[in-house]
Image (tube, rainbow, N blue to C red; front, side):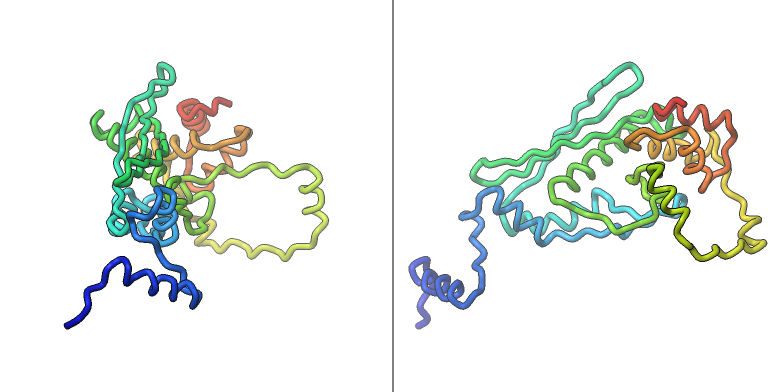
Length: 251
């Protein structure tokens, strides 16, 4: 008859594993909440595998993160849940704040906040859809912060989380001029004739660009924003002024 395995029998095996250099993974009931978070962070991999074909950038969704993390939560017997609330910063700025909580069976918790601004200028969407979009963004960034998710390198003008280009210091700019650089290839007639999509308040991309500009940190000149946006879009000066005003970057 086979001998059943109990805790007393498992101790010599655990000690033997440590002696042989194999780290023993603690049982879920032996882990603190930080052990459980570490366990998940070391195993969770969620790449930016989804493509936004309109603006040409890669991204990850809230659903893809939750699909990947749920089995790991089961292994360490933890749960995740969100608590959303609306915060009105001023008359024109309403934010959705979410609090993401990781909890275990011992009552230990780790909480991480996430924020996203409700966009008042989303044509074709109801108020419920606007709030839902803000909730999704806030959840995604809270998940990214809690689990330490990193993204693949992408071009700054295609990354919705990237900052606008910054001006180089004067000394660095002068040094760059002195360096010999190979001549850039001339544009072909097809490239020179490339027509950029028109960006105006009626465009489907208008609000996305406004949100991208609004998220930029640091201090930038109007011309830097103009050059950055006109790499991808054709936009009039009047519409550019409106876009900068709506994004809080008044020139």
